[in-house]
Image (cartoon, rainbow, N blue to C red; front, side, top):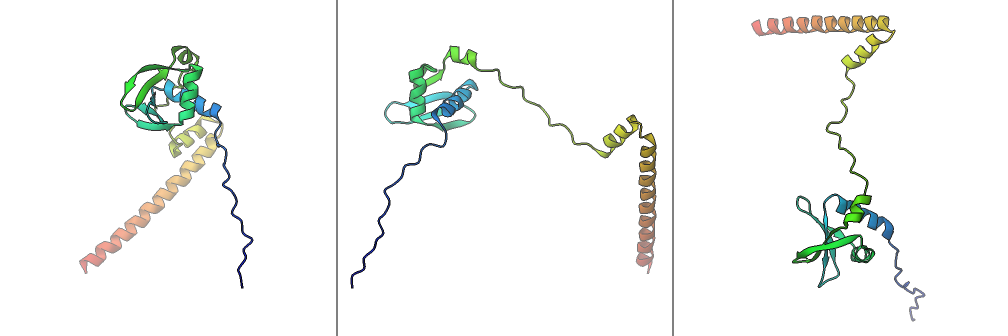
Length: 158
C-alpha cells in the first residue's frame, strides 16, 4: 500500500509592514529633532539612530535612504559604521517645539485636603459630623489599647 498525501505546503506568504513608511519617516524626524543622529552604513545595508546617553537604536535602511533622497537629513560627518546625518535646518524649523516636561505628578488627595474642601463649601455641618465620628473612633481605639496594655502588664508580673 502506498501512502498518498494530498498535503501541499503553501508557498511562503509575505506579510506587509505594519507601520507605513510615512509613519516611520515621522518617527525618524521626531527622533532627530530630539538630538539623535542617523548613521547610515556604507558597506552594509544598515542604519541606526544614535544618542550619546541612550546608545544605538535600529532604523530601517530604506527609510534612511528615503530621508536622504527627500533632503530631510544632511551629512555632517563620518563614523566607523558609516556616514552621519542630522536633521536639515529647514526641517528643524518645521518641527513643533518640544512640550514642556512636568516636574512632579499631582499629589493624590489626602483626607485633610478632602476635609479642607468640605470646610470651604456650604457643608460645614457635615464636616463637624465627620470630625466627631473620627474623634469617637480615636477615643475607642485608645481605650482598647489601654485595656490590652494593662492585660499585658498583669501577665508579665505573674
